[in-house]
Length: 208
Image 1 (cartoon, rainbow, N blue to C red):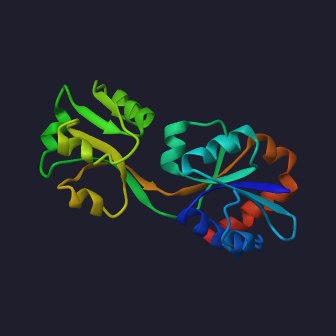
Image 2: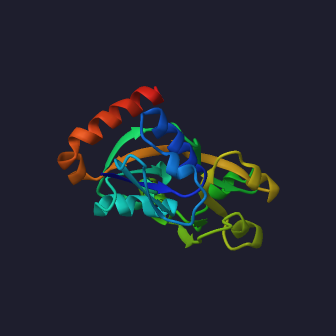
């Protein structure tokens, strides 16, 4: 049996639709249930429904053979797994954002940056040779500059509507093309190659 780790919510639905086009029986994912471990009716596939940030952990540990995770999560966590394919789902970008027309803040030697992407932010500013104060937040990142907790935020942006609603805007696009990626456990790719490689091939065809 091949096990997938899928992010609960919209991405799981989009992933299921993609896998279905490749011949994977995903009908079990369309049923309303509180179960977090689901198995296809043909007995070939199992699905773990987990938090988006936990997908790489399940795959790296080998509990799941494959997973579908956002590139932002993969950048942040740096897990030891194979990133096999860009699935072109949920495209967005990682940006520095703040109050309109305040690009001057980005050159502030005492810049305060609020983010949940701590490791990625540290890498970005380290590569620039800049020292900044990173403030770790887990949610409602837009609140930080509004309340004066930070000067700017480093966060994922899709439509920008949440930024606009809070009087903020994108000041700099740092990473574009943030999409869902297919990741594979390194051991599984060897031990279950006969099942996994053809599936990856089908996904490439569907995505392209």
